[in-house]
Amino acid sequence: MATDCEAWLNANPVAEDLSDSFLSGEEDNGGLVVSNKNINNEINGNWLSASSNSIHEARLKAKAKRRLRKNSSRDSGRGDSLSDNGDMVRGTLVAPTSPKSKLLDRKSRLGKGRGLPKKGGAGGKGVWGRSGEVYGPEEVDAKDPNYDEDQENCVYETVVPPLDERDFEKTVTPIVQEYFEHGDTNEVAELLAELNLGPMRTEVPSLAVSLALEAKASHRELTSRLMADLCGSVLSHSDMEKSFDKLLRDLPDLVLDTPGAPQLVGQFIARAVSDRILSKSYIEGYKGKVDCEYTRAALDRAAVLLRMSMGGLRIDNQWGSGGGQQPVIQLVKEMNLLLKEYVLSGDSKEAERCLKDLEVPHFHHEFVYEAIVMVLESKGEKTFKMVLQLLKSLSVSSIITMDQMRRGYKRVYMDIAEINIDVPRAYFILEQFVDNSFSVGIIDVKIRDLCPCRGRKRFVSEGDGGVVKLESY
Image 1 (spheres, rainbow, N blue to C red):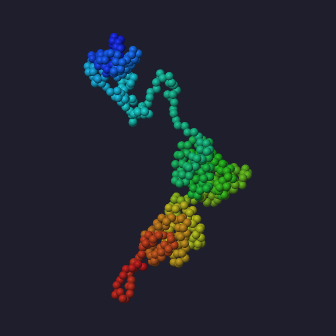
Image 2 (image 1 turned 180 degrees about the vertical axis):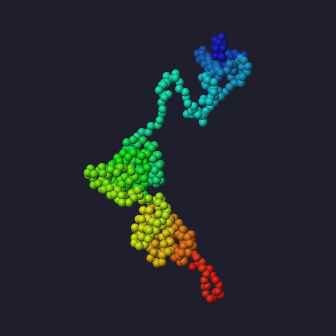
Image 3 (image 1 turned 60 degrees about the horizontal axis):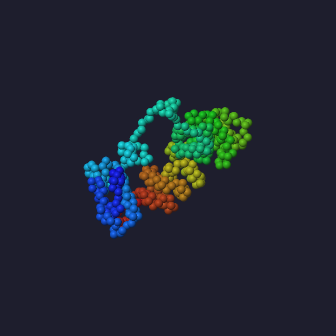
């Protein structure tokens, strides 16, 4: 199209007198027809000089070239060229296309490719492929320049770096503290097996013992069981001996936090010898080599306990089995002994301490039940007042929670019919005890109103005509 226009301009030079009608140049059969109206050197009533004609001529040529360039770029993708009005220059008539349609065209503007969507339509930027698509193993290409024959025989394994001293305490301390809650030695062994302890392996028993020194007696018993179960499976006997050696060396520092550390460490040593974790000659190996008084006290304590074990003392249960690990029958016996000792001594502080040492806060309702039953079976007012005072003290100090107190009273309400068989005045005593408990703030109104009352028959007076009425005692 541009070539035809240039040829036409060369063959037909623009006349000196062209009007503005060329701007709307009429096209006929592919040629430009210029109107000869106002051919005289006059344009819109103005006479033009030669210089002005040349300027006007240059402007017309520039407009014509821009117009031809625009038409050629618009029709570059088609075989036939169109005019502005959509007329076919050559070929058949085709409707003009809008340049705005190019904006939504996803095909390559460079004319390359098949016009298919990227990645097969499986996502846009930052997406690896279709969702749920699983890639199979890639075959190794021997012709790859990065190919290495040694890579085919490689075995990849997960390598866990060994723990240093700082990471060891942060990692193992939560495991031991959690063990004090659940008491499962198998779980601790599995967690330690997953760690690369390395040279810190000998620090596990000493860390557990140092944590148990500041804990309860039941936790010390759990620690002794943990060391017995870990010895042989996770730790060796030499690791145990090195760990206890470290404990004896650290006794001056342990005494600062736990004054009774030498005696407690001596008990751990005696228990370890009894469980065959340490050899019997372990204590004898320190004779004549100890300068620290705390280490000497710990070894003396262990030696005394071992000599007593030969006379029948059981070291395997020296810490006791506190908490929920004790059988229910044993807990009930200890609570009864605690109540009897309190009635004889009258020391409520000692009773509170003994109840705490049992470490069964979930079973305190049994203590309330046994205390009330003792009041019902007693014959004097001394037991009545002392038990009432003890329950008041335990309630104020929150050793026995309100929920456990309610459960204990409700259990007595449920068994009062059977208790009444052995104690005829049980209903009367229970009603008085419940009223006094409410007055001192041990129980609330709801528990007081639930107290059962035994009905009995009686004649009110002769004026009632001998009518029998049912009333509470």
